[in-house]
Length: 198
Image 1 (cartoon, rainbow, N blue to C red):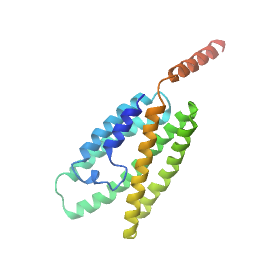
Image 2: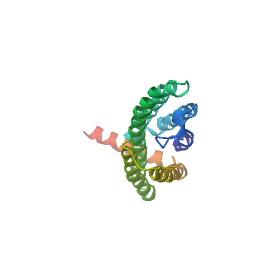
Image 3: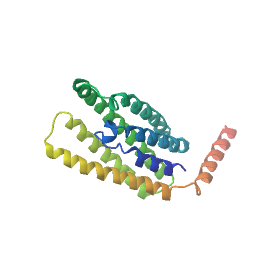
Image 4: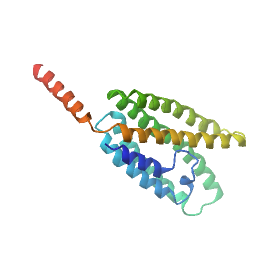
């Protein structure tokens, strides 16, 4: 269905934390590969709802953002340039990763409700709430916080990553084409019958 590719891509990106090492080393190219894998997954999921369609374009934008960051990461630059780059790119990463997770999780929630999988729908909604909390912390962190805050954020980040990964894996295992194609086909037939009557 596409969730398998999204799971692999999400694992490969490793960039849930805006401060991840991925954004400061050659590992950025691993994240590019992960974004392309997720793009392939979203292309397959896009037919199911608009959230996944938006996710497809977000994945494309993510590839370009990562490639745009790479010239500042790989070669050596002066300290002033790196400080400025670090601040600006971090704000971009926070905003972008928030939008990416919002559309991914909202898409899962909408699809789970459509096929009446209440358990997955509830988990997706919980993760959407956690997304707001998680990325709000990073906004506060821009204004300076105690060192203990970073340890807390790292733990929260690992928990958030694990919950999203578990949710994606549940989607891969439980949301399949079985019976779903028939439901979509029936929906189209009903829509065609209404059009003919009209």
